[in-house]
Every structure is written in structure tokens, then in C-alpha cells.
Length: 326
Image (cartoon, rainbow, N blue to C red; front, top):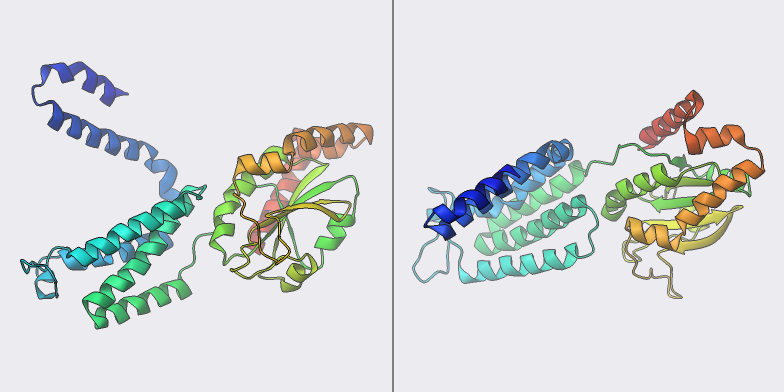
């Protein structure tokens, strides 16, 4: 606000309007970044993101570093090896188009950043191999070592989710026919599941009550559960994550839906789609009415109102269990 006030007050008195406009735009962007920095530093300053950033800009650093770029090969007509040639520019433009297309379906900032890192590394592999096969082999080896040793950080924020194992999921889903369960089938190696974790956790905090519960099961850890509930772990099937609605232990609906060939129908996992498709608002209000009709006063206070001390104890137990599983 202060930057905009300064800009609009003093702009008429400055003759060089366009340079000032560019400077003000840069200052505004920097101020906006600094304002939001405390909100993003917790996940940005982690080994996975720091390493990915440096691997993303590796080719740019090699091509532009004085003293090093002079010894590199180039196809430029002027022979300037410290600048991109036409083929490298073409590859970078193609990379930008791919990232923009992939980010159209991204729903979180982590997904946007993850797509940028992934395709930048692929482009760097091509660029390094084209520049020098030895650099290409070295960079590819670093990428393999990075994938094997450095995993994306898992979501560890607040949630109201019950984590199932292969022995507890059937018993829990069939325990009370009045309880509706929404269960996410996920795998920790899936980047889509990792990006969806904060969205699902936020929904559990908003809609969890005695008659509407949220659960998760790691089918990457419990493979027989995926066969029992017909959720494929293959990356080609695109069924991860899968949200399944259960009533009395029976499946009512799932998203994404699966066609006759066992392939998932394209579906966007954002909060609006989930609330609409699973009718969470209506189910939440009906669940609160069921609590009164069946006289579940303790459960209502425990899950819906969260006013007494007991629900906080149970919430801590569930969160501790989820963090242990993760």
C-alpha cells in the first residue's frame, strides 16, 4: 500500500515515466515477496527444495560463469560461448511451454514448484549431453543420486484423519453403519498424493464430526489393501490418490472414477470439486442431526463442537498416530 501511494502521488512530477514505472514494478514485486516470505520459508528452506533449485539452474550457471564458459562448445555464429545458441534457446522455450501446460492442473504451490523442478532437470540433462557427454553423464548421475536420497517433505500440519492399516481398515469401516467414511488411498512415492495432502487435511478440519469421518491408508505400504479395494498403484493408471466414500462398510462412490479398461477418468483434486462431488456440506449437517437423534452427546462434543478437554486429547492421539505412520 505504501509503495502504491508513493507511486501514484509522485508519478505526475517525474518526466521519465516508463523507467520509473519499471522500477516501481520491481520494488512492488520485491515488497510482495518479502511480505509473504515468513509464510513460505518453512517449506522453501528445506534440503529437497534447496538442492532442486541449484540443480535447476545448473546449466545456466555453467553457461554464464566467467572463466568457465570460455572453454565450452557453442554453435553461435559470433563464437560467443558464454551465451545461449539458437538450439538451447529453443529447448528452453519448449521447457517453458511444457511447464505452463502442466501447471494448468496444479492446485497447490508445491505442485507448481515441483513441475518446474522436474522438467527443468529433464531439460538440463538434454542440454548437458548436447554440450559435453561427460557433463551429461555427471549431471544424470547427480539426478539419480538426488532421487534415491532426497525425498520431498511430507505434509505434517494439523489434520483430523484416522490412519488405517491392512488389519484395521475393514473393522473400522464396518463398526458403525451410521458413520460415513471418506478414505484416501495414497502412496508416499506419488507426487500427486503429496501435493493433495494439505488439501485433504484442511477438509478434515472443516467437516470431520461423529457421523462423517476422514481416513487414509498407504497402499504403497499395504499392497493387499489396493487389491481388496481395486485401487491400482501403477503410475499409468493414474488412480493415486483415490477418494472413496463408504457407508456401513460399502463403497458408495469414488473419485477418480475408473472406466471399463481400468483407467482413471480425469478429475481435478481441488477443494471445490471434492465438496461438490461428495456433497460434504449436506452430509455434515445430516451427521450433526444424527448425533442428536441417537443421543451421542459425548461424540458430538468430541468431534463437532470441540469445546471440552476430551476431544483435544483424542485429536492429539490421532495426529501422533499419523505422524508416526508417516
